[in-house]
Image (cartoon, rainbow, N blue to C red):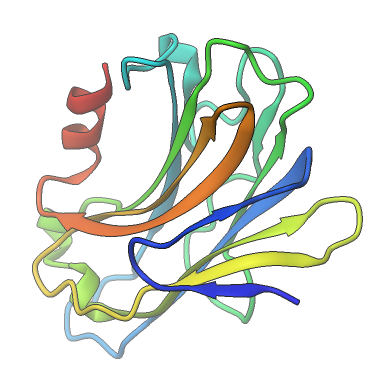
Length: 184
């Protein structure tokens, strides 16, 4: 049975292979333009910096160099139920330099489309066992990010040899570029 987390909660993952599923729905908007939300992952070292440029996983770089992290690709609409984007993670293959994986969702071209996370609802991140499909944990964002264009949903980190997930739910207005500047 999955554990439903609240912001700030941490939980052990206890699965060497798991999938991160992200989902969202769009409110009826007056922008007249479709929404394109993008999931990105930053594979960080002990100093909270990218291990290399190739350890930034997003729609233009779908795999980590060691093939331990594989992104399913960009869902341009978010239509339908369930996960809109998925990322498979295999901890048995992950580079030993990776100590943290930060999961961020951004709105593509948010400024020019006049869009923000206040127009997004039912946002969630969940982790499930890749082999059994058993859901391990889920975190539903219940905050109203009325001006934010990027949200750090959570982070997966290695503490004393155990991989854990922390529900973060922190938004900001400066888009993906801000996260790239933080982690490079």
